[in-house]
Amino acid sequence: MSTFTETNIYSMPRVYANTCPEAESSSSSSLMLRLEGSGEKPRSEVVHDSSKSYRKGSLTITPVLHPCTESSTRSTSFGAQVDGIDWSRPIPEDIIAQLIEIQDEYAVLIFRKTGLDNNRHVAFSQQLGQKLEINPFFYGRENDRIGDPFLWDVSNINRDGSIVQPNSRRWHHSLGNALWHTDSSYHQERSKYSLLLSHGTPARGGSWTHFADTRQAYEDLPQAVKGMLDDLVVEHDLWHSRRLGSPTIFKEPLPQERATKPPAYHRLVQQAPAQGRKALYIAAHAKLIVGWSYEDSQKLIWKLIDWCTQPKYVFSMEWLDGGDMVWWDNRQSMHRANPYTASMTARDVRRATIIDDGPFAWGVMDQEVAAAKQKAEKISMGQLDFPQNP
Ligand code: OGA
Ligand code: MN
Image (cartoon, rainbow, N blue to C red; front, side):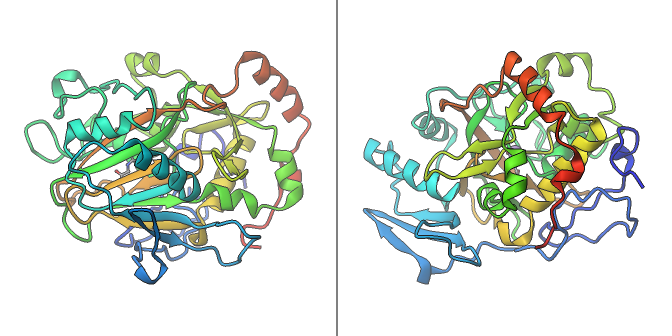
């Protein structure tokens, strides 16, 4: 049975397992879009295991996920909590350099109770890269609660303080955040880092963000599959993920929405920032493999998202206190939010997004897309078969 045609992928039942607290599976149908990854029991917490902590200068680093197998001498941990930063004043440049080194290694860094406000959040972000993304204010500047074009309101709170309601376009737009994604892969000039900061204390047990290690996932693929993925180019489209998240409301984006965001092209396999590692660059925004049919593209894309989000590559970070902040590298991780629910409580998280200044920042341009298309046409889906749980 074919499961990923353009007519039925948007109407398949969605399951959001791998959420915290664990969601109930909504359907036992085999025609199911496994938005959550492999569907096994999630790693539901960041275990702050201080026996794993080590010092680097004035900083204390506590890694989160350790691989099941030790490969070579290099660290293959994913995620780390970093303590020991004095957030009350501008961060000195030598600490910034140290943090970037740590970030390159772990891909997701967690900071607790930073006490940062909007201005300091933006100032710290600007120390990590020259350009920040400007919020497109899809739902009107006049509805903006925060008042800073460098900050995105990722909260579930309206300007008047009420909680976003299920019938609003903003609610439906946000459902796409519950799909595994990287931020801004739908921009031709993509972003490298995202920094999400919590204001106010979220209700315990109700606020999580989930992260998946796209470096280790790539590394663990069979060699023959890696060889075939290496040259593929992916078309990313924000409106594809919005439609997957909310098939009826985002069946057709509004003309101003579509105009603000045409698709973008990026390589599926990327060089990770440090350590000579590679990573899969993939997201729910990924719509087509250039040169492939829609159906085969979606099959491969979701197979890879499933692969990357096996529990061994995933951890879930709980938002505990106001001032908690997580800084992730979109080039070597995926993430997702918990889906909105009718019973959710207020959650005020705001994001700064830093534009990539590395060698792959601009993705793949016209001529290269055409060349990739010709090459990709020679690969069939069947050649890319690999077991989901080897
Ligand atoms: C984001 C995002 C996840 C969350 O801000 O880009 O995906 O848990 N957020 O809010
Ligand atoms: Mn995101």
